[in-house]
Length: 315
Image (tube, rainbow, N blue to C red; front, side):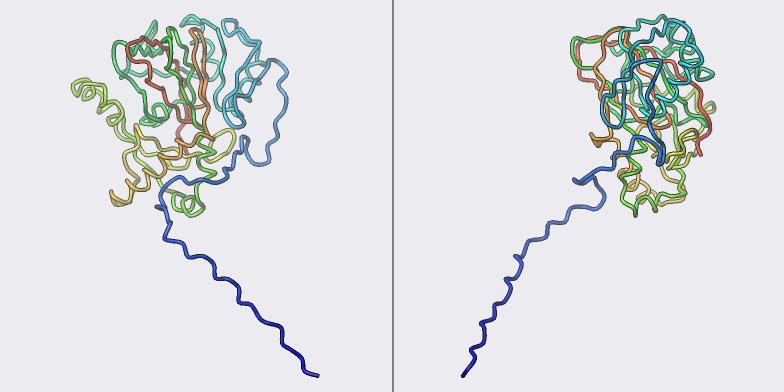
């Protein structure tokens, strides 16, 4: 009796695809790690106000507080926890006087002055009137990183809003770091970068005005990765307005790496966008975020006042 061998089949070869590589230095599709709290930290409910998240990662509206009145220590402590956990807090319809806005900000420390910008009712109140002079719009940045001690945070109030546009966006720079490729995280470990006020301000300030402050604000170095002094989280601490180069790298290599790091603020999953109404307040952690004022209201007036809190030396 003869046995007939079973016919064998050859597996089909996988289809050949043309080269579809994209440049390595970019932001690519795929899942994002969206971690709002430091590793191991647990969220707790808020007892002294209502907190309404504006997204899963960054931004929360606070309801039930009148910021024109002094805050009890217990309320201020809980607000501080909310700021650390959500990075930017929004308060609708507060309509604070400049004095009340300053009093609120003083709950977090000494107030910062900025001679490079126009002031309001006091020297520590910066006034942005877009109808008069262009300011920091349409660019992602972190405030005053050209100082040895950049601002801890800022309290911004819109005095006058345009009929449309003029929103502000914030980006979580801890999430931006978390989602860097591992090779890039290793590459930037221990690097330092130079920050200078000139690139950002030169866009809308005369050379005569800027020259007067070159001795007041010499270039400073900060770590590319900042460790938050309260949460311990690592955050990217470079920004388009003020970071000019990475120390110790050839200019071309520095420019290429900075371009990659600057892009990280542009990822929508790391952002929150706030549509303003007159009298609204935003309070953000300047150590953990970048922000972007959208200049999409041409022909209309937008007036804002900002009070900033002096921060510490990044490390």
